[in-house]
Amino acid sequence: MIQVLGNSWALLLGMMMLMVGNGIQGTLLGVRGEIENFSTLEMSVVMSAYFVGFLGGSRMAPDMIRRVGHVRVFAALGSMISAVLILYPTLAEPWAWTAGRVVIGFCFSGVYVTAESWLNNSATNETRGKALSLYMIVQMAGIVAAQFLLLTGDPSGYALFVLPSVLVSLAFAPILLTVSPTPAFDTTKPMQLRELMRASPLSSTGMILLGGVFAAQFGMSAIYATRIGLSVAQLSIFVSAIYMGALVAQYPIGWMSDRMDRRMLIIVVAALGAGSAIIGMFSSASFTWLLISAAMLGGTSNPLYSLLIAYANDFLEHEDMAAASAGFVFVNGVGAIMGPILIGWIMDIYGPNGYWTFIAVLMALLAVYGLYRTSQRPSVSPENTVPYSPVSVNASPLAVEVAQEVYIETELEEEANTHD
Image 1 (cartoon, rainbow, N blue to C red):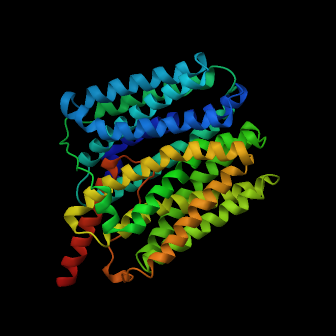
Image 2 (cartoon, rainbow, N blue to C red):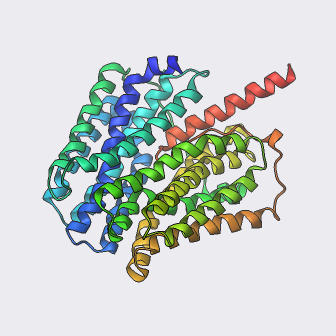
């Protein structure tokens, strides 16, 4: 781990600052939208726009990098992020924010692809798994830290929009001054949806459902919190609880994943996620119970992402894993685009509790479908499963491909040790 930090500290520091900038802008817009009297449906469209841009960026960024190089792509996209962050308060209109979120999503996706290719280039076969774990921790820590920056200024003013813009601008300094600008770069073409469904119907369906859940976490949690009347301080803690739960639960669930029926674990975790949402429905009057439900939601939904990828790998050949992971990122992104719009529509009809209702339904559907799949395909014994590797839900397709490399290298090493 020390070796990984020594080789990648500048990149990880820069990525943490970028995640702080990205983490605060979503929550801040949710609070500012309430101040500007935007409707729930208008804000849901604004939040959905980020995932439209992110999905587009993840598909286009590799071509941009191959055409003009890492440094130019990184610097250009970073400049656009800083500009949009400053423009938000000056153009307080739903259409302008929607356009800005598309641009922000596109740029952050491209930045992640660029940074992750550098990270992969700096790691060896022996350190790649640790580098990926550190990267995930940095991402989560940045988002959590971002929520508390809301307490440093007035959401109705300009300072809180300037702060993430400055952080994003500064984030590029340690990266560009210390990282080699020309790592080898290549990506894998995504597997088609019908091939994904054939390989693992549970993972494919689960990724679509989880896309909606992630959209609720990342895009709509601040809007829900403002609608039930939480203060800015309470809202910050509420959103942070989701990501703290994700960070704490990722590794225990991963440990269990390698030692028990992985499909049954998916069913149980999804059911717990549905239960956490049901708790949230009845907890709007109790901030303590809201935090418990938020932490449970993050602690179930985020590990499910890695679980579903690992479960699909149990039925894939090594040469198909990278293509499948890229396809899963695309499927998950489609679900994330639709998620905020559906939540906004439900909240307009049923009130703020539509937030929890939407999540509960999606998680319950995943658990029920998992139970159905137990009658359609035999379980894979833990001895025959590929190793679990944690993957952040904010990761680009490139990071998921790196995780697949870790899967394959670990499995091949275990097979070699077994034959010895």
